Amino acid sequence: MRGMRGRKSSALAWATGAVAAFLGALLAAPSAALAEEAVPTGAKEPAVISLGDSFISGEAGRWKGNGNTWRGSRYGTDLAAYNCWREISCSYDPTRVYGSSYANGCNRSAGAEIKHLSSVRINGRSFEIDEGNRINIACSGATTEDVLRARFKGEPPQIEQLANHAAAKDIKLIVLSIGGNDIGFSDVIASCAKAFSSPVEVRHCNERLRQPMKERIATMKPKVEEVLQSIRSTMGNAGYQPADYRLVLQSYPSPIPRGADNRYPETYARLNTGGCPFFNDDSNWARDTIIPDLSEAHEKAARNVGGVDFLNLQDALDGHEVCAEGVRQSASGNTLDNPLPKAESEWARFIVSGLTQGQQQESMHPNFYGQEEMGRCLNAMAETAAHTFTCNSPA
Image 1: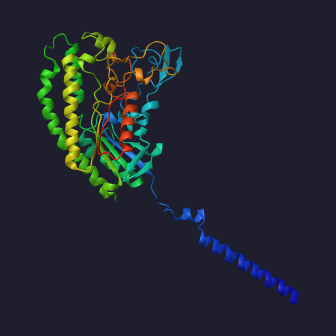
Image 2: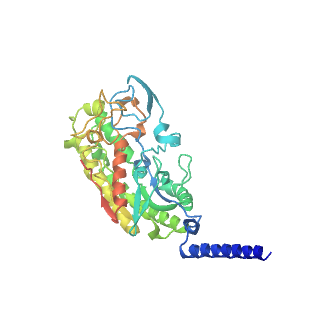
């Protein structure tokens, strides 16, 4: 019996020592399991989000360049094309690019600007952004009122949508494009095209609209400031401090070149072939007056609100606008598998005569390549601490 008690005592001593050693090691060097438990289980994933209108929603992202044909994949430019037979016929499904937003016309494309934003630098620290956390709530046709207060195309105001995402995610950057629809920019484009195409219109659109456009831009600026202030308030109500995220206001790129940089003569070739039906003086006015005036107004709005970064995109498509000298449209031989390279392509959507391709609302917006370029610009800015960033076309 004494021997049995001795063995039990030895076993108990060994077990006690083993437990003590284990606890000692655990206290001296915390395990990975405990380290994981120390991370708050409710931590939210870092995310970025885009608000505003068609120039950031991804309108025209269906088109990888421009190809002047109604058949097949339109010389490899139509990303909605599939099941193609010898480039003669294809099936088309715009939801392949715009997803469910095609149903209401918001046209948020899969390659929209925000989808290219991979990281954000804030206060000396970089945050990687997963693809699923690059959120796009912008909607084609939206005005400042649609961001702030109005239901638009069946959706709540974008500011309400922002509040919901701010609660669910750790928002690190908000980028806004707004104001173009407040000044009726699409109506100006239509008016200029009509002036070029009409045999009875005498005055060019810049002669009729120069002064009204200045007044509209002046009226737009305080509305943009109100949107920026509302974004700040919304984020504050969600528990964010201004230093927790970056708020970026961006300007608009020009979709057309100056008259002298147009590769087509000032004839109907610009309408029937080029898809840029504008007189030289109207082109110059749009490129050298409207776009810079808009950019200046946006920069002032960002400065007036304070703590808002400004991304200047007015020259982002330079040299790759519709009908620009030095680039071209896709042609026979270009396919979805063999597209015209980006460096040789137009980066904005041309105006399609007769609506043989897509939707009219896609006209004069950055296309797939243009959105990729704007995404490059936003990414370049987000990786720096710059509060003002000017992005020029690389070629």
